Image 1 (tube, rainbow, N blue to C red):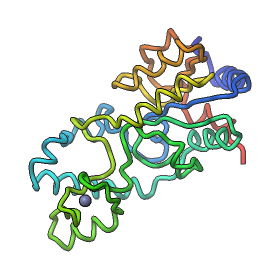
Image 2: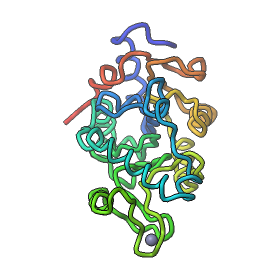
Image 3: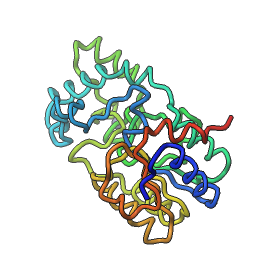
Image 4: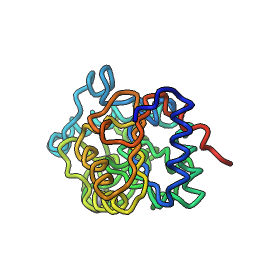
Length: 253
Ligand SMILES: [Zn+2]
């Protein structure tokens, strides 16, 4: 069913939420756009104007590593200023209420953690851009530290003390999906009674696999996204209204 209007969307969503003890949200860029985080993949988004740097290229040259960090620091104002939106707050409310055991996200902006989710309960399929890791020894580096080295080194990206390359903790194009996160996402999906796909077009693999998996396991499926998705026909409820407007009534303090 495609909700004909906002009120119907909210009341139907409330029924589904009230009926479910185990709810697993799966979120994409759409939940963060009201927070000022650009949707990289959308038409006109950063990645259509700036070719993304492939993982192999990052490994292959200092120039690409420098460029990758230059781009990251150029976006820092948006990321540093971003605060959780209404969608994040609503999910955090349900989480506090004990009905969300974990959340799966394609986002790299850390806003679910900022809204109150324990980091251990956020499964990040594409990693996290708010800190960095050494690719060899996994040592964690804060962005402020990397930036200081980068700037004092005339725009040369610093390396780890072990000699490894330091990269934001994101999954780059051409980089393997994190196996543990994929497994946890699958486990959560199979265990839920209600699967909420929010702000994701469900096109990019592996995102596309999860709604189907949830549905086949008997969960109810809700899709809240501006644009239609190819899973709309399968869903118990489809909402094309603004995500913040739809989820705001579920925020509790
Ligand atoms: Zn290292």
